[in-house]
Length: 443
Ligand code: GLC
Image 1 (cartoon, protein in one colour):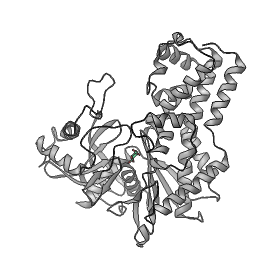
Image 2 (cartoon, helix red, strand yellow):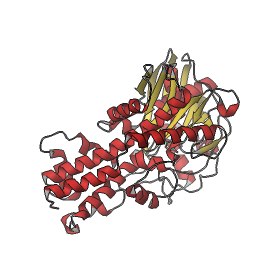
Image 3 (tube, protein in one colour):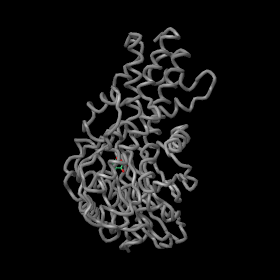
Image 4 (spheres, protein in one colour):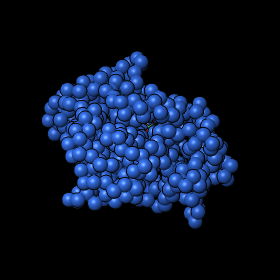
């Protein structure tokens, strides 16, 4: 592709505008988000949920040997953990398996897979823990990060898949029951006992509360996006509860034509609107859509590249990280990326344009998530006087260059007061630790 310098900058400027909110727009979405929390907590129709967890926050003194299993958007992970009280713990063993491989060697989350295959795969990942380790009756916490109807500590019916997962037969079923059947099929039922199921945001909350008593929000910014918070008067009952908002489904939000296009072509149009604008599964695709647009503005000939850009979901969010991380004067990494991925020799002004585009899309994600935190904090502490820890887990937050800074800056910009007592903590493996803590509490 070959652009005049001005032309490409004008084009990027225009796309950038579509991906940028001004302060007033963010403030107004913050208010709408808070309103949705309030409505949901009053049992009124809302795009947010208000699912309580069935345990209080831990005391920090929990002790014992426990397992946890984390079914995320891309992997299934099993852990054997020793909790030692005083907010401390030790990893004993861990296993990690991808749910789908790029070469399609296996794929447990497509329409071609089956419930049995998906749950056997989880059981087999757990089996790794029991190799060379004599285990009987080990309590386990199960992290299941999809919208569920939870009716107790160890019963949760999947309402619908999200994050483009399509394994048939699971929606409408109790996933703990499905896991228990898989444990029986794999001769593990006596060794590992699922005790408690929870969302990954609840897991992150529990892990953080095990270490920091002032935890108020548990959040995951990874393949998907969601947050849980400490509610002081759950559904007007006067009870304190940790509540999962399923806030990826927030829909009172200003979208642009790329968001609309992505949503229309997704597996579940109209659902998880916020998630589709902010989370790791989708940012690469938003970038691809914007880049195709940028290239067609100059009527770039498709023969100039290998067609990768015309394949939906061909660009991974990790590639955005590589592009954003390139600080070299000549933008060498981006040049290399163009050669390898697009088979294009990108000119310098094109490389700069691509970097700006990637940054704009990633920064918008951080600003929108900050908006949700500001709404939750403003709701639980309108005076902003308390001490609050926001615990965050997730690959996007951890790995995207600049993300933490954008999020923090945007969050403080959206809070009207000083919030001296506010801390943000990243919790590596938060969901798995939280599930272990919860399993220990139940035991
Ligand atoms: C999706 C799921 C939600 C989960 C989040 C982060 O939004 O619906 O349950 O917490 O992804 O993994």
